[in-house]
Length: 293
Image (cartoon, rainbow, N blue to C red):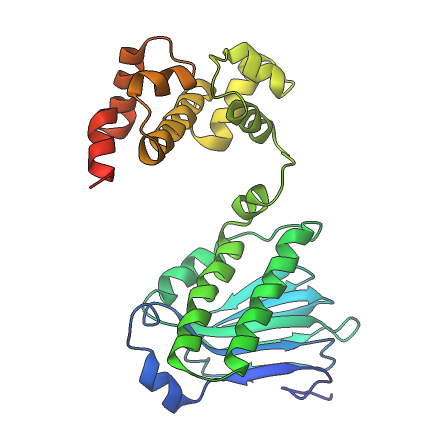
């Protein structure tokens, strides 16, 4: 059967020269995480790679079309559209495009002091359904951004920029829900709907019943679901949002603490200060003085 490692129509591939890597991978923050290969293989029919001894770097393969399969130390798996796989360093592996529907893949090899830790996190991360177009588009744009930057020259500044961008790319795989929430105003879960409602009403003293109504749930069901999703009770989360906003007021304005308390729906400034100290570990005034040093 025909097998091709590279050379596909429209492919993009950059492999950083070893001599270049030796000169720039020992400095911060490149030493923590950097890439050694980056590329894009569109509709890569007959694509096949086999490394009996593994690679010296970790390999992230992100499929954006078609499908493929892989094998890591005898364990087999399949990768479909908007799914990814990370191959461990130093372990025998192989991967190949599907014969019926060859994959289109973005890929990179990465290494560095934090590579092992990131690999462990990535292998436990879950994929996000491909209807999340904003997430797919961002990943594609980040791959393209890194590729084009390296294409313009292997300078130390270019490589440092690419390595910083790599952290953001990996973040989209580790924390997809957080990315999606930060790029859309549409809440998809009861907790998210309620948090939007809380954020829009930080100047009020919301009741638990009002919060539950915002999510169209009964109070007991809402409280249970909210805590399961966020780790906090609804009222505790609301108070923490208020304190978070209070920190912004303290950092960015000269508003008196009493006025800040009123802006956040606290009629008693002393009660507000007690809550602030409980959550932040210090009084509002002490927080302001420390942050303004």
